[in-house]
Length: 324
Image 1 (cartoon, rainbow, N blue to C red):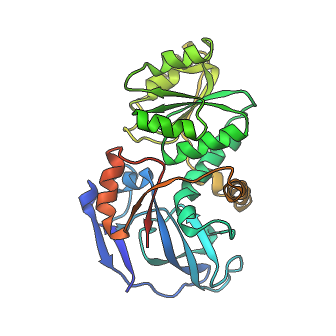
Image 2 (image 1 turned 180 degrees about the horizontal axis):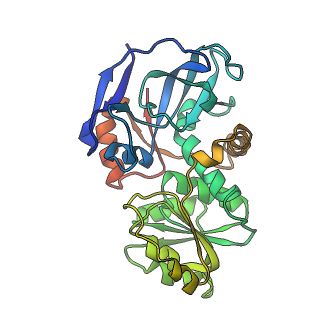
């Protein structure tokens, strides 16, 4: 019988339950997909805790890869037997199989396994829009990247190196520093031992960086702003340490006419053509080996509680997946 992880109230990891569920036939525009691997993302915790609003009870998870089992009327871009991946709403990826809207599916090329796809679709497409859409980076530019040893961080670092962009990464430990360096970080700052903004200024001859990519949020916000060059852009694309504080817009002018944005991946993959272009570029880099996807944690789907505990405690590096 199919199973899924569900939750009936918001809170800590213990609210997640492993249940037997029924999965029907796909309706018009839908598919039934059998998952082979499911992505574990920090965004999942935002739904579980209620930071992102949900209507309970609900499933959880926004990323998975597997095989199409059946298609409903009107579905033409995938057929039964196709290997596919996806990321995005609605929730419910933590499941052995499900019925969902076919429009979210991205066909997988032969060179990429379902496990790799589940580890990189959300992270890789995030890296894609951060580097290819959100700011006009030029070869030789330096960027500050927080959580450089995380799943998004490792992909961003490798991709940036391919584009000739210098990455200054922040990490919490020497172990993570070694991982970040091995994946393209030119300089690594251990934020528990160094002043991040001061070190960034040293590395950029006092100028600061034109772009800061910050998925940490509350704990790094002030240092991120202080690291920017004149007319620089702070991209707050995650809140692992909590929401960023209110912004005094006058300070943006005082600090050098700075810009701040809080983007969402959904707005960069809503258009099928743009999603296809970003995915195609990502898949090409991964298939060729130019970008390696590091899966450093594997869990059983029924162990979602344990997986969330490890994720929130900062004990993970690279990508994490549930393997079915």
